[in-house]
Length: 438
Ligand SMILES: *[C@@H]1O[C@H](CO)[C@@H](O)[C@H](O)[C@H]1NC(C)=O
Ligand SMILES: *[C@@H]1O[C@H](CO)[C@@H](O)[C@H](O)[C@H]1NC(C)=O
Image (cartoon, rainbow, N blue to C red):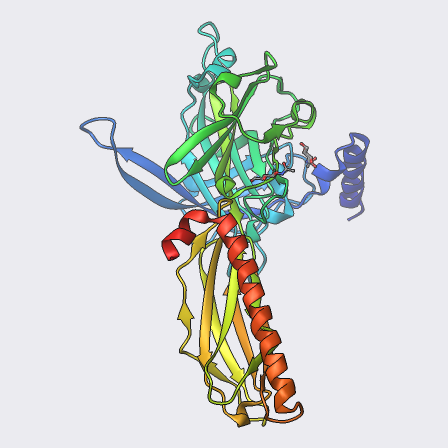
């Protein structure tokens, strides 16, 4: 007992003396994973099928005092149980830990990897014909792990002595923002970083940022760190920035997008190239702009037996899907009910890419409808909201008929004014669509 605790204390001391405390105390995950391999057909190099096999990963920093000793689930081939040493601790993030008993687990996939020189201009300095390729003396895997609740995604390149299952992580590329939602006109930081074992020469890398949306792609950033060279001629001008000092200093490759507009929505891929190796993470940027709501006219006056129109104007939202519902709640305490007879305009798109739509209901009020509350309810990804107005039936109670007529005229004029303002604004925003409407 005392012997054990002495050894334990000594190793703890050694750990702290070497300033490795975080790595010694790290609780690294043991993870279920899929081993996925592309089988190429005999005829040629076309991949013909994917084979997929259950696998299990034990991760450690190489310094841990407490290893995760959980047994792999039954039925996993022992040749697919890997021990991975990541001396940077990146794979030991709590965001990648499966939670005991939880149904949701980190998603993990590993694939065989073949080191190869990358043939794009900004990576040419990394490989020269004179150096022997990295793959001669080892087996290689790439892994991709997605943490819970989109908190972290890490891709790693793993080196294994030939024929073993003992792996070393030789590079990690990660993002804390695999899925990011933003409103328009904000500055957004897409997080990307990389870690290399300390003994590696770490100015030998290149960084590339790519954008993809519905099959179309473009290069946003291409940088050769070895020669500190930006390859601008391939880049479409865009309002994006990478802080090169941070990149060299702390492996922070984050991309800043300024003044986000609709066209920025899509997939971003951050790739780090090393000699013969590369790893990348993808990020999804979603633009979500909540709708503005206006209910007209307000105040809402009507004469008994005469048709009155109530209009709900929903504008400035993105993406397109929006649901508009109407509800009427009588003043006499009877239950509120949904009105299904609304008329919906087609949607219009403004120059900046947001949408608008109007919905109207027609009402022929009776005296007993006085003080009924009408509401327009909107459901949208960005926000769900509601606007209400109370119907004043002229002559129903309170104001005399002369007052009511006066107010009716005021309401009528203000409705006309508001309509005019709305028309002027939406005509400005989208002259094309407006013409079509007419
Ligand atoms: C990475 O750099 C950006 C600036 O480019 C900074 O805003 C961000 O906080 C940095 N991230 C980390 C984890 O240090
Ligand atoms: C942001 O972009 C919009 C167009 O999408 C432009 O009208 C506006 O002036 C820009 N704002 C800034 C601060 O650059």
